[in-house]
Image 1 (cartoon, chains in turn orange, green):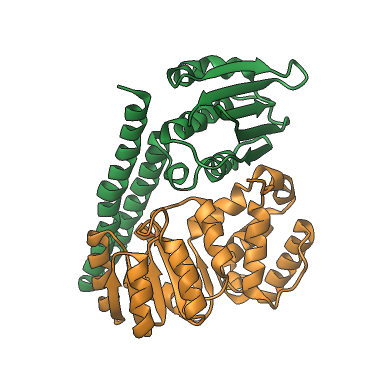
Image 2 (cartoon, rainbow over the protein chains, first blue to last red):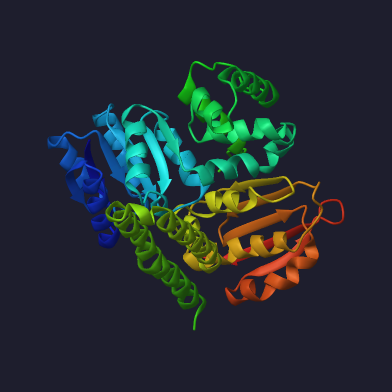
Length: 221
Length: 182
C-alpha cells in the first residue's frame, strides 16, 4: 500500500516509517506539517494519508489538512494518529467523513499486524475507531444520554461498543461467538431503544449515528 | 510571579510533557513492534510491555489535564468544559460564548468549574454553566451547584483581580465570577 505521513515529532515519525516499511508498505512521502502534506499529495498518489492532529498549522493542523485532502482526493483514506484521547477530536474527525477514515492513539498501532489491519480497513472504505474511545462513549455517555443507555441490556451494550469501533455485523458476531442473526436482533433492539432509524444497510452512517447520538450535547457554543 | 507568568508556565509544562516524554513513549511502542518482527517468540511479552506503555500514556494524559488541558489551550472553554462535564453523574448544560480569552483567564475559569463540580452536589439537579464576555471581561455563571465550594476558588479568582459572589437565592443557587480582561 502507498502511504504518506505527516507528523511533526521526528522520533515518532522515524519509528513509524520503519514499521510501515517492515509491514511492506511504500512510504511515498514524509513531512512535518499539514501544508507540506497537501503539496506532497498534489503530485504523489497515495492510498492512505496518516496525519497527526497536533501539528502545524496551529492549533490543530491535522484537521483542516484532512478537510483539504478529502475535498481534493475523495478516494484517499485518512488515518489520524493522535496523542489526544478526547472525544471532542473524535467527533471532529467524524464530521470530516465516516468512510475510509480512522482515529487511533499513537501508542496503539505499534505492531505490523495492527498497523496493516488499520490501513487496509481504511483503504477499503471502512471506519476505524480506537477501541478505548468507542468504549468510553458507550460506557460513559454524556449525561443527557445516560438514561437511554442505561435502558440497554449488558449484551446490547457490548454490541453497541463493537459497532462504535466500526465493526460489521459479522465482525461483531465473531467477537461475541454468536450467530450474525442474533447480532441483527440486538442491533434492531438498540436502534429502537435509542430512537434511531433502523437502516442497517448503511454500515458507516450507522456508526456515526450511534456515536453522535451517544455524544450529543446541546450545541450552543 | 504575576498570574500571567504562572499560567504561561503551566502551559509550557503541558507542552513539554507532550513534546518530550509522551512522544518518546509513543515512539518506543513502535520500536517494540519492530523488535517483535525480529523475534516472533517474544511477541506476547512485547504486547504486554506495549500495553503498560499505553497505561503510562493514559496516566500522563490525566496529569496533563491537571496542569493545563490541551483541549482548553487549543479549542477554548466551550469544548474543554463539555469534555470535562460529559462524564459527571449530574446533567450539565454548557453555554460558552464570547470567543477566546487569555490563558490565565481561561485557566482560572476552567479550574473554577472543575473544583466547584468536584465538590459534589445534587446528582439529579441540572447544572447550568454559562460563559459570556461583557465590556469588563469574562462572566461565568454556575447555576444549580453547591455554593459552599466558592471558598475553594476565591483566592485564584481574586489574584486575577476578579470577583466571585453568590446570587440567585435558594431557588437557584448560583456562583457568579467576573474576571477583568481586555
